[in-house]
Image (tube, rainbow over all chains, first blue to last red; front, side, top):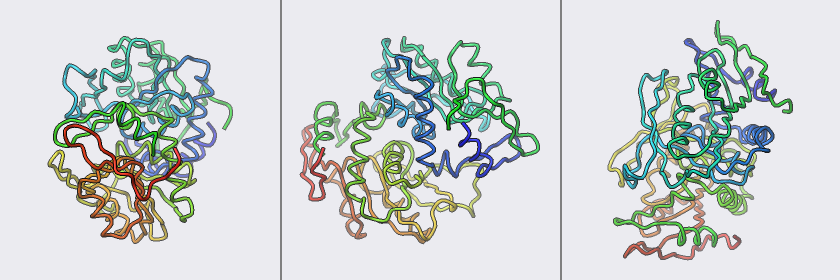
Length: 199
Length: 199
């Protein structure tokens, strides 16, 4: 998606250790207009699928996911990074998600009420790097007996392991922007096979 | 807002100690259509004000806030509940927010880049109970030298202290639904003076 690539070049900042900071438009301050266009791109890509639910993880997945849910006219569910006091252990699906950046493992939680075996789920997240969050969400969908129809990602770091791991699961992935390298603190894009031409 | 009151009566659950659970449509699974209508209501109420930024706090404020930002065509900023590794102490505004429910005090954080003294800020949050989160966000706006134009709340527990504390700050509050009592595990509404008649 051309607009997203332009904003990454103009407003993104690259730090050592492959850190790309996009907090001025994607995950701290959020450009609502860009976010709406990105959500519409996912709707164009996955619109022919019979999606019944959008699933993401707090916090930075929520903004794109609610807009995608708006286009598909289905509910959005976000996984929580800790268990709410009002949910009992019997009432939840969980998955372990390791963060390589922070070197911690969190248990992510979804109430069993909100995903059921009839659901066709589209997973939305802001970043795909090592893929651990997305795989955790797919594990929860699987535990619910539901089906993951696809995965929509705003920014993919294609030089990390996530896409490969997701491709092994035979899931339909749409990344709006694929970054091939952040070496020498410089952004180099891959043009994605699955790219939405528009925008 | 009639639709929201209906959903609270139909799908909300009241637990002891004044806990109202609305996780099937408001803050775990989210009804995208309801959320869009609520955002539009805030736009109707505050639309004549010159708003330059929407401010909320992760995680459950994000969905309503991004939709409100979409209507106002301005950026949305969400305060974080912990300091991101890429932000230094000099680069942030912070406020202490005490949660009476969890009995913990968190430091909430906004990068100083994203609120400046020209900003007219509309604060959006899902619940107003004791008002601590909203007051924390107002404190951050004040530290940035900016102006809080108003506060938009989805569900107000009018029997708790929050509204009173906000009224002392002379801020324009719009609550889409005001709950007068949860006694005997039963929801009783106040009809709000500031209510949007439509919807």
